[in-house]
Length: 382
Image (cartoon, rainbow, N blue to C red; front, side):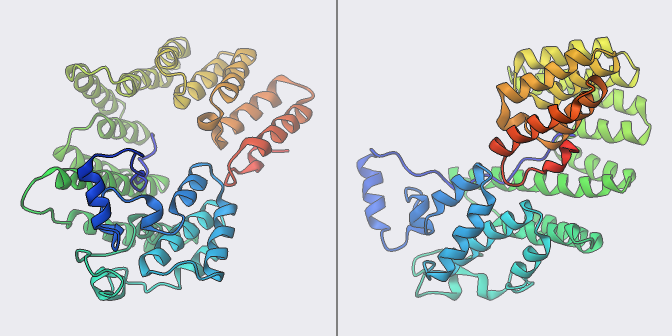
């Protein structure tokens, strides 16, 4: 199942040259950059652009060190800055699988994230011109819900995720549907999809298929998104309803073909669904053909790359299956380097080579040089 989309990053800095209107706007909000769409990330929060860059590169240990240093030197002057740095620190600790440390960090907050102490209007001296509302980042709300799951408290995690879902759905837009409210609507829709996908993943991990089907059908009734309908097909397939999955995949194909869009991602979605049907029927040759079409359209489609290699392995063509994964790691390491692909590649090495230990050590050395901090090196099984 495709992973849900992550929350979008903070707005990018403005271009160096801007219109006279924009320049005037920048000058007018010098005292309160939070209200300006033209303010840079660093004027919004101390050195935020560096944190953003480090997170994009997976430098989680560096973020933890930077947050500790900023706190020790008292570089954070406003309440919202403390919350932003706490969010980056919490995310980094979770990524590094330091869940107990993350729990201790979270305990520094009030468990009620809607408390008055997290409202801009509670600090008029700091935010004299800011509109009322919460300063809690959405990512912090999601981490607050997700963390109990990593500590073994699944029920608390689900309770918080459902509470977060209701929070998102209760958000009200201003009555005038201007461009800003449209942007806000799009953003909250993405957040809703993200949380729904997280909830479905939790239920799916426990094989609670009926709950997943109910959630997906409720979402599809509001928005017949091809991605959602595909997820419905995946759950139906795991549930054993192959005919239902086939019908869902046919609906996806009609939606994509009827949209008259040249969206490569959606075309690949249709091809991957077809390949999945061939896989279930053990027609690996036809599945490989579909995956090859996906890779021709998008050379970084790691799902198609991984599944093509597995199909070739099932066809007893270990040499080519290894080449497919090695080529992907060489061409697009930033997207292909994940634990699933490395585990599969190491399994193929073990089947194909007598000296697989030496080959896996070479792979592990390369991974240590290029992988983000949160990569789990144990997947090489050395």
